[in-house]
Structure formats: C-alpha cells, structure tokens
Amino acid sequence: MQTSTQAIARIVPLDRLRWIAFGHMESDECGAMNEFLAAAPRAEVAHGAVGCMVSLDDLCDRAPRKLADGEVIDLGGKRVRHIDTPHVPHNWEARVLFEETTHTLFCGDLFTHTGDGPALTEGDIVGPALAAEEIFHATGLAPATTATLRRLAALEAQMLALMHGSSTGTRCSESLLSLADAYDSMINRA
Ligand SMILES: [Fe+2]
Ligand SMILES: [Fe+2]
Image (tube, rainbow, N blue to C red; front, side, top):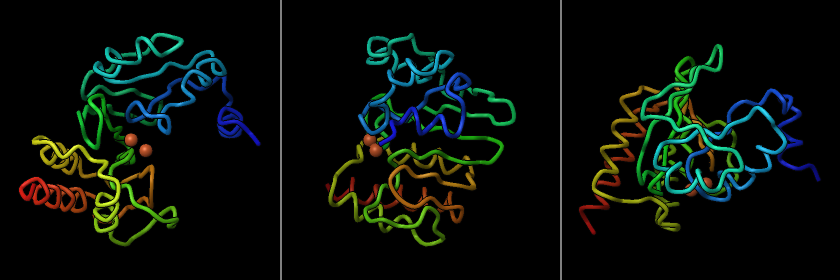
C-alpha cells in the first residue's frame, strides 16, 4: 500500500511541494502533516493565527506560516485566499480556502453527507447535508454560524469542493444560503 506522501508524489514532486493547508485540527485533515514536512523540504504549513497559536506552533515539526483573515497565497496562476470561519463547521481554528481564479470554495467538512456518491453532482447537496447533521451533530450551531455561511455565499463561488461528499458547480451561493436558513431554524428550535 502506498503512503499519502507517495500518492502526492505521483502528482507533484515532493521537493516542489510548497504549502500544506487544511481546514482544522483533526486526523482526517492533517494527521500526516509532519510526514509531509519531513518528505517535502520546502513545504510549510499555512493556517490562521488562532490555529497556529492554539495548536500548530507546538505540533508542527517546522514553524507554520500564520495567515491573516483574507490573506492570499499566490501559487503562480492560482490565488488561494485564507478565510477564518471560527466554529464553522466546527473547531475554534476552522478556516476555508477560496481559489480566486476558478472561484472554487474548498469547503472542508461543510455539506458533509453520507454514501458513496459521484465526485461531481448537479443534484441538491443541502438535503443530504442536513440528513448527515441529524446523524453526526458535527456543526457548531453557534450564534455566528449562519452569518459566516452567508459571508461565504457572498463570494459567489462557482464550485463547492467537498471533503466528504459530492462536489458541485451548480447553485453554489444558493446552497450556502439554504444551509444557513436550515441552521437558523435548528438554532431557533433548540
Ligand atoms: Fe472536521
Ligand atoms: Fe472531515
């Protein structure tokens, strides 16, 4: 079985790998972080200030690069914007990434749904996400949660790239707003 670093090396040589980025501190997000730092000598972990202060300054084998909210890393042809989203979908240090040239929002755990769907769908992603929320209770349904989702909707993403489920290039802002409305109802019911 190949390791995660061997798998990445099939796409980009590890000595060219420059940035290691993820949504928040969980094993499925960043469990191999230090393996990558060891295998890729030029790579740095890049995360928001809270994530660095609370965890990454201590956990990373090389010091992480701290990003301000809205700061952009220019990859040369692609521009990746870091956006702080505290507690959305969960964890204090949560963030999402927005690639500005393709208008791709890397959603992390947002819209997580169960099942083994296709990589891309034109179908509804809000209903399946709400069904999964009923099972896992994974989202931090806090007072600021829905305002954060509405701020993400204003990005007018053209692709929602999901970590757990089918990604979509249709009705992106509408789906974020629908998710926010549904969470508002859940918060009001509680
Ligand atoms: Fe997570
Ligand atoms: Fe996850």
